[in-house]
Length: 506
Image 1 (spheres, rainbow, N blue to C red):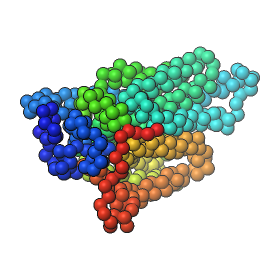
Image 2 (cartoon, one colour):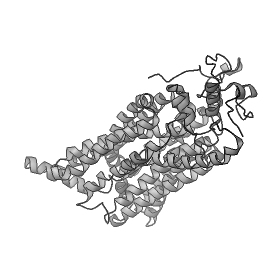
Image 3 (cartoon, rainbow, N blue to C red):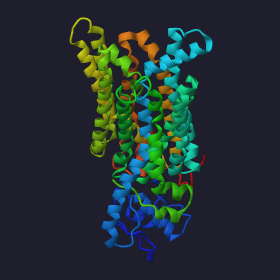
C-alpha cells in the first residue's frame, strides 16, 4: 500500500506501469511528465504530493487507515460523478430531447404570435425556418460555451466553473417559463441560446474534471459516466415530454423551464465535493489544498427531429413518442455497457467497431426506405435499423470521444483541446440542426448518406492515427501518440515527453 510518511523524504510506492523505481522516489509532474531532470522544487511535500497525484492515490498516514480511506474514496467517487453529471452532460441530453415533444405547439405559438402582431399568418416555409432557428440556436450557444470553457476552467477551476455555469440555466428557465404569457417566441430563442452556452461549458469541463481526478486504472470508466448522463438526460427528456406529462398544448413552457431542476440539484451538491487535484497543484500551486482533496477512484440531432425521422420510416404518428423513448433507452443501455467494458477492450476497438456498425445499419436503413413501398415489412426493418444505429453509436463514439481530449493532451493543453473539440462538435450540430429539415426534403430516402461518409472517415482516422490509451499513464500516451504521428523521429533518442510546465496558460 503506498503511503506518504511525513518523516521521510521519499515517496514509498512500488513501481507500477509507467513508473520506474527512480520516478517512484523522486515524484513526477501531474501532467504525466517525469521530473527526473530539471526538478526546481526541493520541498518534500511538493514531491510527495506530485507522486501521489500521478499514481492516483491520496497520501495516507498509515496502513491502518487504508480501509477507511478506500470507503471514503468510493463514496466521494459516487457523489462527485452524480453532482458533476446532473448539471453537466445530463443537461445537454435533456435539453436536446425535450424540444422534440412540443414541436407542433411551439410552431403554432410562433404563428399565432406573428399573426397577433402583424395581422398576417406566417407562410409554411417561414414557420419551418423559424423552427429550425429555435432548434439550431442550442448548438450555436454550445459553440460559445465551448469557447468559454477553456478560460473558465483555468481562471475559476473545474468545480467552480460548473457551479457558475448554472447562471445560464436559471436565466434560460425564466425566459422559457414566461415566454407564452409574454407572447414572445424570441424569449424561447434566447433561452435556447443560453441553454446551449451552459451545455457547451458543461460538456467540456465535466469530463476534464473527472478525468484529471481519476487514476489511470479507472480513468476511462469514470470519464465514460459523462456519456451515461447524456443518455440519461435524453431518456428523461423524452419521458417528461410525453403528452400525458408536460408535452401537452398548455404545459410546454413548463417542459422547457424544467431544466432548472438539474441546475438546482448541482448547486446544492457540488460545493460539498473536491476540486481537481491536478488543477490545485499545477495551476494554483496550492499543495496544501491538493493534499486536502481525496483522489477519485473507480448523433445527437436525431433527437431534435426524431418525430420526422420515424415518420419517414413509416411509424404511425400516435406511436412515434413511444418509439422515441425507445431510442433514448437504447443509448442509455449501451452507455452503461460501454462504461463497464471500456477498460477491458480499449478505446480503439469501441470507436472503430461503433463507426463500422453505424455505417452498416445506416446503409440498410437507406435501402429499407427506398423499398418500403414494395414490401409491407420494410417500415419495421427501417425502424429496427434506427435502434441498431443508436445502439452502435452509444457503444463507442457517444462516450469514447469525450475521453480522448482528457487522455491525449497534457495539463497545459487540455483546456484548449476541449475548446477546439467542443467548438467543432457544436458547429456541426448547428449546421445539422439548421439544415436537417432541408436535407430531408432534398435527399429524401438518402438522408443518411452524408452521415455514413462521416462514419467511414471516423473509422479510418481512428485506425491509423489514434493510439490505444487503456491503462496507460499520460506520459506513455504522449510517447505513443508521438510515435504514431512522427515515425521517423521515433528512430532517434527516446522522446522524453512534452516540456515540464508549472501552470496552464490562457
